[in-house]
Length: 157
Image (cartoon, rainbow, N blue to C red):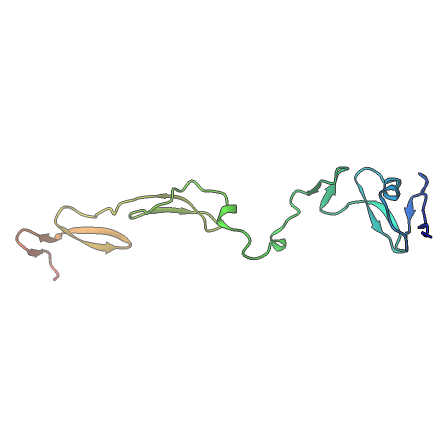
């Protein structure tokens, strides 16, 4: 003789349900009244109760969840999970730059790069020297490459 499993009938007026030692079937679940966009959560008594999702996300009546804007903060991101592929591109073109002119923003990102040039100080044949961080030259200190001669003029040597 086959034993008849217990059956549970739920009226539309039922707001919560406690099921123990029963097989929950689609018929039981289909008859539970639940507001659109709500989910079943066990309450303090262990009874499944319909509640709306709260906090940093929402859910619609098709089960699609949405994380609220600005809900994911730096502390919630695991270390080493922001890769180069996830960073916005800058206007800098990848490549090598000669005597580069570089612009860096406050986060340390290079936002502009261009090949520059070293600007010589003084006139042709002047020997270059550092003058307070800038290249400079003096007519009193010259080099003649063809003759391999150094000329120093002035009062001090």
